[in-house]
Amino acid sequence: MVIEEISKSFGDFKVLNNIGLSIKKGEFFSLLGPSGCGKTTLLRIIAGFESPDVGTLTFDGADVLPLPPNRRQANTVFQNYALFPHLSVFENVAFPLRIRRVPKTDIPSRVTEYLKLVQLEGHAYKKPNQLSGGQKQRVAIARSLINEPRVLLLDEPLSALDAKLRQHMLIELDQIHDKIGITFIYVTHDQQEALSVSDRIAVMNQGDVLQVGTPHEIYESPATDFVARFIGETNLFDGMVASAVLMPKPEREYLVELDIPELGRIKVTTVDEVKPGQEVSFTIRPEKILISKEKPATKREDINLFQGGVDEPIYSGFQTKFYVKVQNKVLFRVIKQHATYSDEGPDILWKDSVFLSWSANDGYIVEVKAS
Image 1 (cartoon, rainbow, N blue to C red):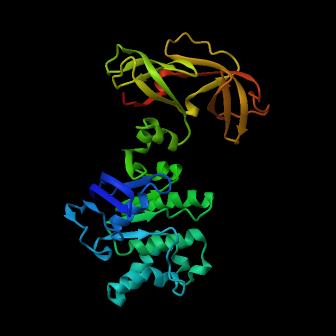
Image 2 (spheres, helix red, strand yellow):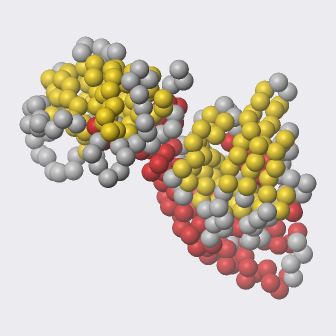
Image 3 (cartoon, helix red, strand yellow):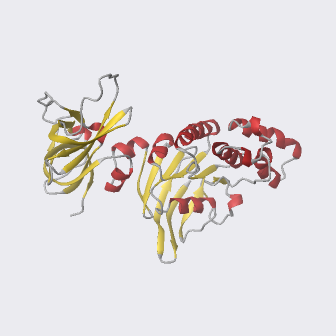
């Protein structure tokens, strides 16, 4: 699927601004962004429920914009399930086949096949009001897949479920995708959902696509300040390049020193050429920072080291998140994983004096500001 220069406005409000995306056949592709960023409008344009003001949309090279929704071979799973309450699970799933006038003798085997796919074969003759939220969503998925579309569109399909059920359904959804191998386009505002199941993610905000990449690329190498803040947690600072030295390595990499007004000097590596005097944004993820009560014994020149006080420790079982105040004004978020058993309680407490350290390789220059 190729989306080129698609724009859409409602009155004076521009919802989509010149969107361009190429989605591979069989890919699990997520549209991720906050409410109102345009992701659902883009999904509705792909489905045929909305028309763009300008732009093109092709499936396998064929223009589908002139086609009505029922001829696009793109079925949609909605967040509110959209099941027929008076029909059984079997008849809900069979409904698209009856609309297409598939021979009656073929319907039972087809419906049974897709109920098995979503693990609901034992619930065929229940009504929707007898099902849990997760079961209803699986019925909606089976009904959308039974016509064997080229593309399955999922509009925040898990948002009505509780957190544990969402995680379970995510795994099931990924397994279904692996079994049938068609293209999934998944709309969500939940970063963890997108990171968990996607082959690639498009991060959107205010009608623009800010970055497209794998979950690893989006998380480790955010393209903008917004992406860095929106995907997971991070520590983000504005600064100015003080120096940049090309490292003596096979790959082209620079060791850069940044002047951060509220912190001082920070070292970071980058493959992009930057020059002294350029304004940049710098990010370091909380889990990349080492926190300790003792000063680290290292002489490496690429280590950043700061001393501060624990302003707030938040224990979550598998990890503790620390808010550490450096130079009495800057709060660092630091995450310490609990990888080994401890029966003596936490070793770092509220108001403890601590050292924060991280390698220049673990930070990232998010973007170079326009001069």
